[in-house]
Image 1 (cartoon, helix red, strand yellow):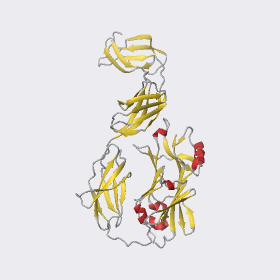
Image 2 (tube, rainbow, N blue to C red):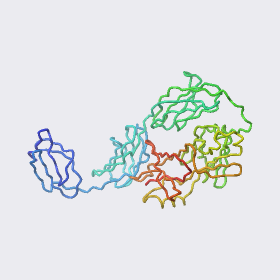
Image 3 (cartoon, one colour):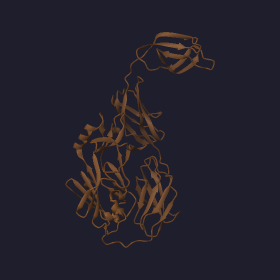
Image 4 (cartoon, one colour):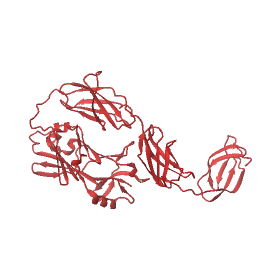
Length: 454
């Protein structure tokens, strides 16, 4: 056009499409203005208004063309190294041949539009952290998935490490969690500046070094590891095992006892020594233990002999359990004679497909179940008397992972628990991990639970 004017302070003219103001308006010259169109449909008049209120109209100057808008449902896998090179598959709707894929600000590599619902590509290098995934069709129609892909960088060094003696042969190690760590490696030495030898690896940020010599000082270092690389070692910390090593009771069994028959698997923890030999981690993922009911039974004396958490790993979730959470307060600090014949059993039950179908009828409309339906509880045996319990008396934590590819677009994810008094399922408002598709929930009583997208 002509006679486009700036204001006294450099203000650009306004550009209207019917009654909608354009954005990103830039005065280039007296005969040129650039702008971004607002939303609209059909044919619109273009109106230019100078800062001095002089204006011009181009009737029917712009026609909106309706463009199919694609949708992105999922990216699988949704994480990989920040160096790039992860083959991904994007699922959605209305992808067009020639579409481009962007991970953050960078265009993906080896893009192939398989069909209107599927794109395959390879991630470019990117910045660590969650990145938007965007698909842009040749006709400029586009879709995005916020936090669609997590670039995992080399993990940082854990910020701190703390070692403390627990008894004559056990030292507890705790360190700060690190973003992007797949697991941690623990190293041990008998001298602060000596050779550190590999001790163990764990996905947790704590570890119990067991079977150590009494009255001996040990030094430890930790590093974080993932598929990109390893962090530097922490500085060392040390602790000295106690010197009051008791004589081993002949009755102390050194191994847990497992048995399975029918629809139930049973695990007996006969002594603290047996639990220590498992590293305080009870792994129920073994094939022979894959039964609808998994029952872990502890001698009461075992639960009274230590105060740090132990871990129960199942195929779908993890429990972090304070031993006193499943022992009645009347037995805390009790003598061995009072604990004779007292057993506590933690019971995990897969409630089956029928329970899942019943739950789905009560969940919000459009909800999708992402896990099996489980219950977790415990019972106390005192001689021949067995009593189901209704509270966890100390810390008892549930951790459940889910796959982002299973979550429909726009859905929230939470752990739902069954409210017995109201007879309905309710969202538990579990804590959602910032970097992983993981939910954490503190349980104060036995519950039925399931992961739901809704």
